[in-house]
Length: 495
Image (cartoon, rainbow, N blue to C red; front, side, top):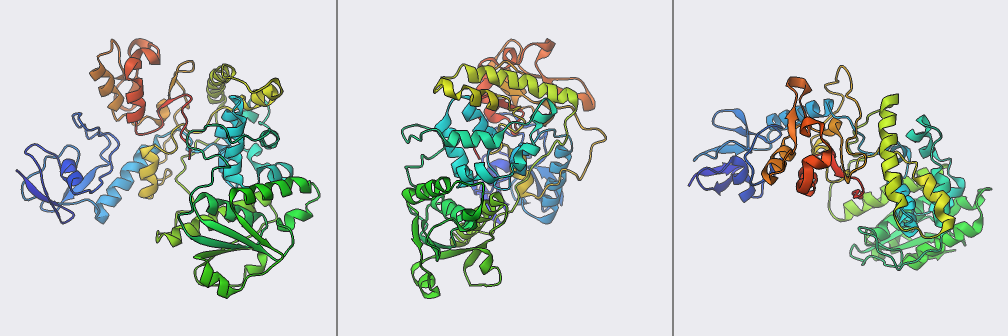
């Protein structure tokens, strides 16, 4: 039985086991994009490189056999640099957006594509909750936001940008019902349990209300303080905002469980003695500093103030949990401006999604115009923004997609326009997992590597339809795919 050390930790494995197996026994994670337990390793991605200290060589952990007496380092600078270069090379060929341009441009990072698809399917309560979850004050913003998201909408390359702001104003006008089920979403009436302690938010403008709302979602008991008699700050001075809209949204926050102490100030003694943390929200606090306090700057652009409030809440949460500050920006692969032929690829995909949406139950004839407008979304965002391992490791290792620029960007292509699974070749890293899975499943065609050299790609032999190649192995292939190359058409992950 070989005995070796992984980062100094002793590990004993059976004869024939790999270095990857030995690392798993001592709970050391080694990243990999092409390895699937129970299948013969290919070492095609090489992300699992580790250093054999005795020889000084970098070896692939997924295929290298564990040898008695081995000393393995999985975290040294040389290993980290190699993994970063590997990721940069993979990303140089990667064609796909992690986030849709509309979401990317929105300062508050509203999950716009998911909201639009919920509207298209007639799930107005779900769409309303997505807007509420991300914006805190969606109805308020629907009146005063300049809608920067619409400037990034790729639908404008076909005809006109989707009226995103009007749609989330419309969904907010739908009578809200807590008696619905949304996978992964929490109805407004179901407050999360208070698990994080008590926090104070000083200031009730857009930044303060947003910070309080995010802290509530993170499980904190939250009290908002303001010397003004009504919450809202400078929002109450906006000429285009009906005050009943703002009042209604403030009331919804109160009903959710956020406490408001208006018309009164708070002493620093109370802050330090009663509350575990505090967020100062407002321009008047920009020159002050208190230990263990976080700041959310108000902004003349209300949606930017909402974003500032969310960021301060997340920072306070991480501080109270003893975690390192989060990266301000997640890794985000960007395609850039699409060619006309690529836009047409998305239009075909959109048509298939529209048919799916029209087959869903509608909540009433009054909602058909909104559903039709939302159905114009081209779905240019990734369907696997959370599960994509390429994105996860690119973020962890500080990868840079621009490090090895390709001479010419690959074409954006979607295969399976009328099928339940969508395949995007530009996102495929040729790991071979789907090829192995379909071969093991014993289908007549399966998936295979087609072509030679640089032009090799995964495809169904003889130009057959995607479903003919996947057959009963579709779910296993989608779940094993380390990127968003293979994904279910209507089973989007939620950030």
